[in-house]
Image 1 (cartoon, helix red, strand yellow):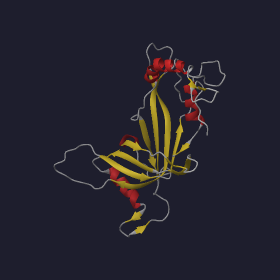
Image 2: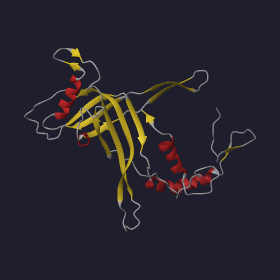
Image 3: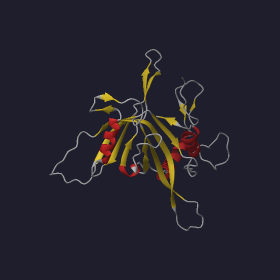
Image 4: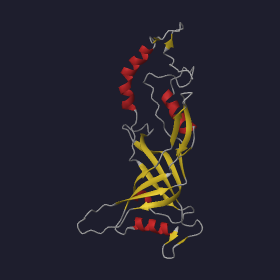
Length: 258
């Protein structure tokens, strides 16, 4: 497969190993002048701005009410690809896609140990310790969870003299088929420990993770940077190429299954 040098790199037609990079000077000048402004204008990540709730069995059974106030941290796995280099072709060949489907949640525990007991009851829906038997059917065995990320944007209120940020949902993850793996190693009572906060780290397996973006999402649309036009042959700068890339990646590609 031939390498693409880009539109500003012109290989000499005489077959020599030299590139004409005169046009690339303009891109370097724009990179030096606009790079800092671009990074300053971009909105950084805000991984602490999320909501996690609807922790329940389907059909609104075994609901963990107010889970959104108890869940302090959610870790969602991403897929991996295994690729090898073909010894003869010297080209990367796809071997396998791996989905771990392991989810971890940190819960804020209370004086009643109600989070631990909720998971203990959940465990009992799978296995009865007293009679040493597995329970039949699916009742009480699976849970689902919704995780939503959000940020703040300036409102379109033209009558206000100052910026008035409003909250805007960005994306949501729907995690289904959750099964508890572990919910702490032990319960410890200790006269020497006066800690008032206790986070319970729980691990789960899940059946599916769906990732989808919010309808009507306000995307970043920078226009004051050197960049190609949003569409080939377009003379309008109303929509930047950055906006087009975001729209294609986040919205046009649709739902992702993790």
